[in-house]
Image (cartoon, rainbow, N blue to C red; front, side, top):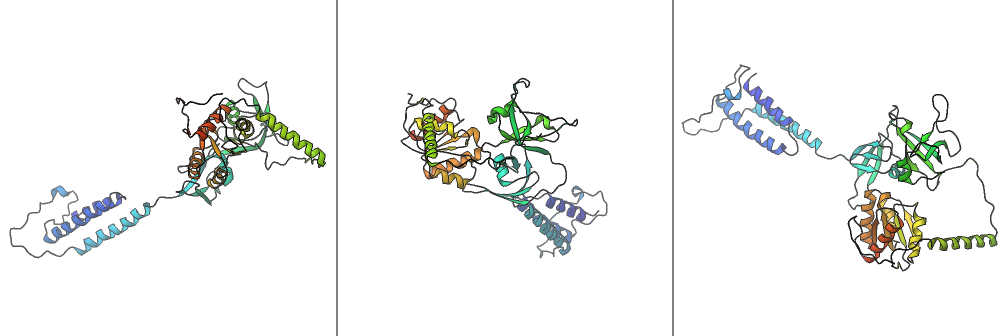
Length: 403
């Protein structure tokens, strides 16, 4: 291998190692080195050597001639063309890695999903109809309201899915279960067996105590169960609870007869009376007046009825609850709220951040409760209308007007 071939090899290696950060420096160094190398070759100072063991350190040093200056010799055109071609090819490679991709593969979890560095809650996965292996494009909304998610390719693999799921399982309380277990699921909402063993017997799904506590499960709840295929149904997790029973069609429909006007009026009066009784069931711990302000609860729809008693005990107005993650819907509801309380154990931090940004922009008083415990919400309501910090740390020593 001749010396010039070794030089070309090393230049090629340098270009292959180029990236966005060092590309300009490498190209500049190659340009300067190539220029002087071409001059030296033309003058014969670096004569080509056929010995493959020749290294740069073996080459004779360049010694300036002690003669009068002469015009610069012509540059080796072939060598220059080779270097320019390598630089051009490297420029294309570097340009290809410059832009950041906004397309990601969806990795489904038992609860929620991940795409790149984006996390989707279980509610978002269901709303967007995301599946394991789908490819999505995520365009982040710089305004901080709502990211744009587009499914650009569905997973068409015929391989067995990593996650198995059973929908509409009926939760039943059973006090004869092993210690710490209180609930099981064997049938769906129609009374059909969910799964059978290899022997043909009904399979019993034991509901994890952590799931029961996390979701506040009760006898008769309808849930979805999911598990990784490698783990088996013995480790099934409750991934969804159908609190409002929307979209569920029972086998038989029972139509109620229309009530007469007198019966309807009496029923409405009974309902109103029940509301009044409910409002008095909470014994307020703090002394403040909401002065009829409507309250928006973000993150816990299921607890809205019970927390309505807290609001009513402080002369509050209408209570609205939402678990929406969409910035547009949150903005619509916040624009009509007098006070907002974010219940953080029921919402993703992205929803919390979005809600806070919108509330600040709309100048809606808000505060954050760590749970839906009535006292926690009551304190959050007071902090909101009193202009106190939205968050209450565990070591905080806020003064509240106690009853």
